[in-house]
Length: 245
Image 1 (cartoon, rainbow, N blue to C red):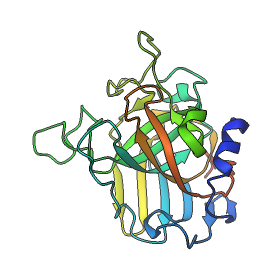
Image 2 (cartoon, helix red, strand yellow):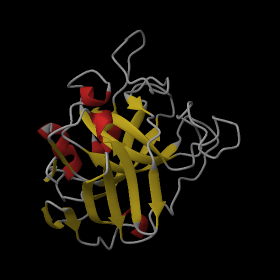
Image 3 (cartoon, helix red, strand yellow):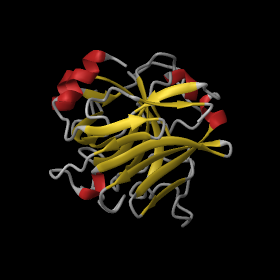
Image 4 (cartoon, helix red, strand yellow):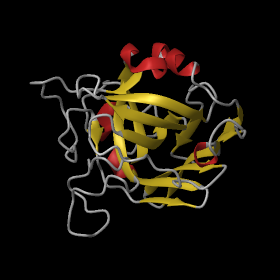
């Protein structure tokens, strides 16, 4: 994990963590954090041939959605995020491109899952407000404000290696369409072990955050605009998943 990037996140921390171990990260309730994004337990566990990425919150997971602004420029994204130590190449990006994170997101102003029709209405371009999964590559960006992070941009004319389900936007982002659940106090994404190359182990953390599309639609296109909670308290990725778990 890039320590310079970590230091930028430290200023945004909401809560210390109670403890972490094989069962993930237990975090204390934040008081200042909205209950839907107030992390109390973050873990990754194996179920069948899948890895289940899970965050438990103090309130109703997924109950708060961004307010639609009516345009892509300036649009907000709400997210439950699992930063990992997995290499970006493990899911189809260029290797060593940044911090690979799994995210559960909602953004009613745009749809970035062009291969999927999540609401089943026959239109694949109107589902952005529904919670859906992404892999993103995060990199340091001082102009993004206190968080200091953005989803890595793809410069015009560049042709980096990208996953087959890349949605066609100039960002290091993937729309894999994983099975997910946002119910009661739990947000979950099920990731096939094969999709991440059957890793022997990796470290992870939990974050709830907002991102925002640049109003000028220039690099940086998508900044982390607000960090609400960090499971570990210091984004040190203290939890470890191993094949024996």
